[in-house]
Length: 557
Image 1 (cartoon, rainbow, N blue to C red):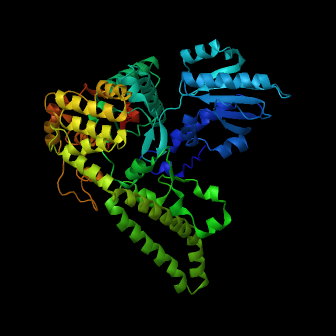
Image 2: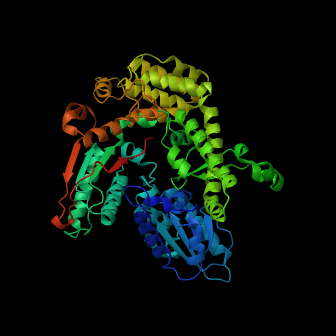
Image 3: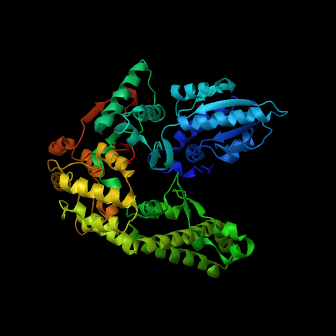
């Protein structure tokens, strides 16, 4: 479990440490129901999210947690704890592993009698409980609980539920359970930060969430949080409204780190070569030096907070400027003549050392990213994307995509480009779509018939239909020429000339309002939602700010 280090969560417009503390308190109450020493057995998909709300050190020092294990089919390591708590998502294949662990423990026996507990996150599942009963182990649990972990604070301006398969569940499996969790999480948010006066949404799932929130509010029987609203507006956008944006290559510093190395729960693992010093080589074993280096990336790091949203082309200038500033501040020690001046410099020293360490790390990360962005593979792919979003030859077989298939490049890359072409052309002509399918199946294997079918069912690949992309692109100014990447004045800088539709919708809602783009909203999938929640007179604020909180439903597959 990673450390949660939440000092930065209060730095945004909303103090998200309140939400983090709420989940931490609830979780600790959940595990403290078991008296005595404990071992926590973690579903691997939950260690990252829980690491953001409760540090492993705190669990061990204050809550009698002696051991932590990964949930694995090989079983549990030996331990002398009194309680073993399984913390898992409601997944059927995980129930098989838990059942095997329990059967293994019973066979081992031992002098210390163990109690077993099961905690489902975010909710219990009847199917999972039935599975455990079929395996004959359900009765082994002293209790079966649920812990509703909803929107997790990742940074001072970012919350995520980390429900990675939500889009697949909704549009391939017709399972909208994740929308209930989303509604429940937003209700928790209102309980902590006050009722949100204005809720807007676009898309079928957005409407579902707002409808469920309305029902949940009615079920509360008029009991509402007596808190002055800290969030004035909530905008919920269904992922289907803007499928194009997550397919494009991200060009900000944080986006490129995620693109190349995959940021997971605010941490990233990087190749060690750039971060190993001569001293490390001398004092460490060769195996430990070759292991990936793990770094936490959040706004607690001042330099990262400054760099994260910058276009990568602007990063070098900022890093260079910061290096000169640090050097100048270190040089101040030479001009310090009095005891007071020396004392002042010494008091600044820990901060200067932390900034210099951070500077070294981000200089190395930037070098790794630059190696990637300077490669022909990246530049050719980016060029292809830019041509497609500008509507250039989108109605023909794309030579670059064709070449990628012929060279057997990553199937993910090929499908990503193919879906971008489909989006920018409002679907592909049947003849062209069939050609691409045939080439992919012959090159990558017949098993990918299912992959292509799923992309069609979920709306990423589709036959050509009425032209809406060009109208939306022009009306919403999605393409911006001559963008200034160093000192940007338009959100299009994040994709070097393309403004995400979802962001344009948020900007238009803030000013002048969605009535000005009724034609565009009618072209986009799903209904428009507007909900006004009444606030008691005594809790109303004198003035309302602009849009405060934006929720995007579902991650793209």
